[in-house]
Every structure is written in C-alpha cells, then in structure tokens.
Amino acid sequence: MKICSATAPSNIALIKYMGKTSHTVNTPANASISLTLDHLLSEVEIHDSESATDSWQPLIKEGWTAPELSEKGQARFLKHFAKLKEHFGIDGSYQVLSANNFPSDCGIASSASSFAALTLAAFELAKVKGSAEAESTSMKQLSELSRQGSGSSCRSLYTPWALWRHEYAEPVEGLPADLEHQVIILNDEKKEVSSSEAHKRVTTSPSFEGRIERAESRLESLLTGLGSGDWKQVSDICLVEFEDMHELFETSEPSFSYRTDDSRKVVEMVKSFWQENGDGPAPTMDAGANVHLLWRADQALQAAEFAASLPDDFQVVASPGLAGD
Ligand code: PMV
Image 1 (cartoon, rainbow, N blue to C red):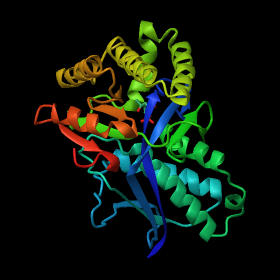
Image 2: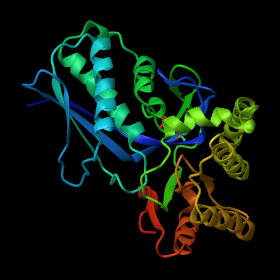
Image 3: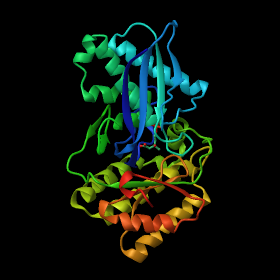
Image 4: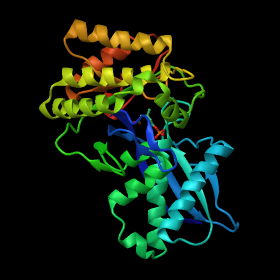
C-alpha cells in the first residue's frame, strides 16, 4: 500500500559541475548554476513491504514512463534510500517505485530528478513516521542529503535557478524566471563513459589546471549577464563553458568524447543563427551528445524557426511555452 510520494524536476547547468573533491559524498570542485526544467519530472512513491529488504519497482502511471533501471542503477537508488532512512531514523523496509514524465530513451538524464524525488519522498515518509529529525530538517539539509545520492540532484529542489557552491544548493533571486528550453536529441544510445567516471577523468587533462578559476569567473559574468538582461553575454558564456567541459573530456587520459558530428552541426547552426539575426539561443551540452538551447520568453518565434531549420531526423523536445514547434 502507498504511504507517500514526491515529485522533483530535472535541471540543466549553465556553469557545469565537473570534477569532485569527494567521490563518495559528491562535493564539487567548482560552483555550478542551473535552470530548473519544471516540465521534466520524476515521481517516487514509497509503499509498505512484506520483504525484509527494500526493493525498487517501476511505477506504472498513465502518461508517464517507467524507467528501466539496471541492477547497478537499482542498487545505487536503494543505497541512497538506505542513507536517507538512516538520517531520518526510519525503521522497516519499503518498496520504492519511480517513473518519469519523459521517456528514458529521449536523451534527458533522469538521475537529478529521480534522486531529488527520492530524497523528498523519504522526507515525507519520515514525517508520516513521526521522525523528530524530519521536524528540524531544512531545505539546505535536504539539498545536502540529495547531493550525496547524485550531485546535480541537489539543484533540483529549487526553481527557477539553483546555485551550488559547496555542500548544498540554494535558490537565486532576481534572475529571469521565464526562460524556455529546447533539447535537440541526437544520440539516445547508452553512454560509454558515465558522468561519475567523467568527474574522475577530467582531472587528468592538462586543461584541468585553471578550470576552477575559469568556472568561477564565468559564474560571476553569467550572473551579471542574466541579472542585467545582456543575453549575448549569457549565450557567449554558456558556449565557452560547455566547450571547456567537453575539451576536458577530449584531452583527458584516456580521452573520451560525447560530441558527435551532429552535435557540432547544431552548435554551428546556433552560431550562424546569431550571426544572421543578431540574436539567438544560449546553448549548452551536458555529458552527452544532445544540445540544449535556452530561449527568452519573447523568442518563441525564433525558437520555432530554428527547430524547423534542423534536419528532419533531429528530434526536438521543448518546454510548454515553445510547444508547437
Ligand atoms: O550529478 P552527476 O554526477 O550526474 O554529474 C552531472 C554533471 C553534468 O551534468 C555534466 C554537469 C552538471 O552540472 O549537471
């Protein structure tokens, strides 16, 4: 029987979390900032269980997609749940069910949203169980707990912006709240190098030297650009920042790459779009081949024009404000 549930959104970083000072508790080498993708959600339900151990199951829900979690993926999810139960002093074993409102093969990572939803669901469970610890748990502490399961999930507890400097993420006030998001899905095959492995390998790149300073200085310029409405500055910083991260991947030992010819083609199209229109999107890429584009609310027509100019086999998933392109 269902005891409680929680949902949490995905997020896309503009200044990237890449490199850790602790691989066991996911403390970041540098500060990162993300836009929360409120339309891309994970839901976690917690049910009673007859079994002696916790277990995971896909959540069947109309219009939602039950994720296909590997044995390893399930173990990681349940390990985080065990940590949360310990923190809140929750006894017993439970069934954990999860689903996403976006398909798991659409190229959008679900770890941030699903770990954030699990953290919030365990918090709900703690309240139901009358946990004294839950009474005094703040958002900062929830963010810190979520970070230990999946680093980038600690930013998914706030919207529209989350800034993560050290132990936890915090909301950022005064930045645009109405940006739209498009993701150009170019390769939905399983990644050969996981983001956990990428965090380790980047430190072997000669360009990792100075990376923390570069990210910090870009973060300051990005905050200034977003705050003052200098969209060109925002776009330029997003571009150099994700290119910096991908160059770290491509120059690490051993090197690896997520960028494909198609990713490069979309990025070139973004540059040409800016040149032709004197305006355009802010592009970014995560640890994958897909290209994410942010548009201001007044650019819906430009976003539709850009999407229409893409090759037919490039799938575009857009936030509700851009629906119809
Ligand atoms: O949270 P992780 O360990 O999956 O790392 C995410 C890293 C990037 O998505 C590449 C960047 C970020 O800040 O989200």
